[in-house]
Length: 67
Image (cartoon, rainbow, N blue to C red; front, side, top):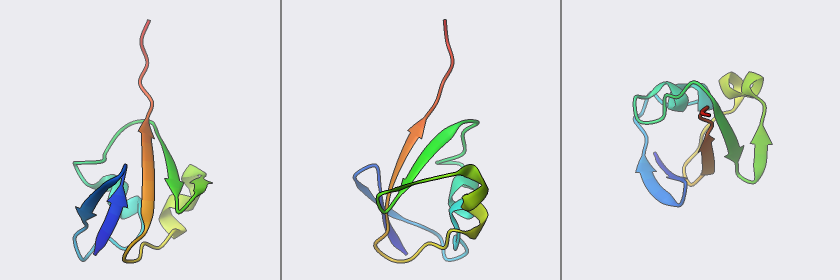
């Protein structure tokens, strides 16, 4: 399935059916991430229930700490 993530086309594996599956992939695994899914910011509790479909547009912002 083809998704657009942060402005780039990404080919997701067939078993990647939900946002939680996508975020578990090594390419996207981070401790803290903010996800915008087709224009809507998701709460982390929504990741497991948000189904992915061909052409979805996703923006991910990775939060890092520092001083």
